[in-house]
Image (cartoon, rainbow, N blue to C red):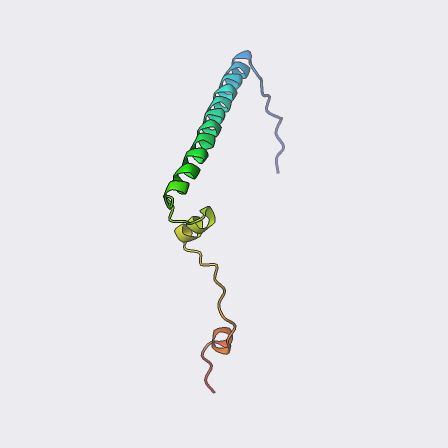
Length: 88
């Protein structure tokens, strides 16, 4: 394997300023989402008290399982399910 000289990376003032601005923007978006989630949770809990809820009583985990087609119900341990249809 050939060895090459290390690449020199330079950090410029513009790069640090851009990083800081992007970081602040992401933090502000995160705060807005948290505020919306807190308000949304309060609103949805109030609505679920008044009605049956918009998710038909399904939990987040159940919705994910349904979406990906995962059925967590174990198969019964009977002889045909363990060994198949063996005929002698």
